[in-house]
Image (cartoon, rainbow, N blue to C red; front, side, top):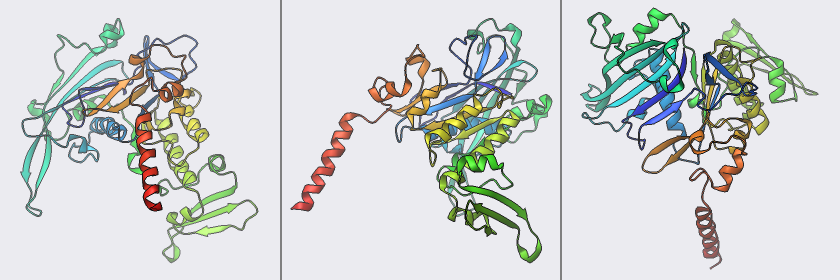
Length: 398
């Protein structure tokens, strides 16, 4: 399963309907250097999708919309999806509509149309009201890729009847489980996805095992070795042997102790790179929020380039990340895999290829220059901050 587009309307936190395209909207040249996955004919998937914006612009929330949809495609009940907070603020008369377009392994183009509403159910716990969400209507459409003559045809399902509807009696679905579960059972098309948004502010070691020494030393060249060994005697579950060059070996019995010896960048690097290796192997999706946290530019660039390298990314895995670090975007040759996140009367998502036709500009310079409005803090806000600090200093002198 390869995602082509996610659309969402009715979300209270967003200014208008949002559209996130995973496919390459711009022309793909024959001598392309940037990794793209060809799904059929001249349709390609971008293997890296980036969301960029200033603080509090809505980058994490936008990632959570993507995560919500991917979890729904994995048959998760919407009331158990962690990031269903994107639905908050709905009243009983409101509805959120998700339209998801994807390609199956047998070269079918699928459209999933899901309508979600809320109802106030009184719970027995503390006599409180909790917002519970349910799927009020849903349809699945399909057509062959042979019917596609241009990119404009990708999302046109006019006069096509649904193959699955939510009101089919034989489905026996819970009201918060998508009909995609029935489609997935027929297709037997496994969908692999890891969401690491929760890892952003919690940097403990989440992946255990004997990691490739090449990875450990890439993150910290001073480490000679790092070994994990499972133990059973004396209630010890694991023994961790860590040795730095020209230092004595350190033996630990809990992964949490490693934070005393390893830098936050090394810990995050092990988590993210090992997770990325799993996703690359499976050809799945990895979501990373604030990808630059704890990393220097070269380490982040290496991770991104893994997904853009056809020798490593053989199965068409996709990395979706947010960042404040606009210099990272200079890695990209294209504009259609960059989304600008802004907040005006709500969160707004715009694709850079719509705002900028040419690919030959240095993207970080465009952001810094203010050409792309509201993507960096304004000079006026900088001046206001400076004045406030100077004013505070003067008060201390009085």
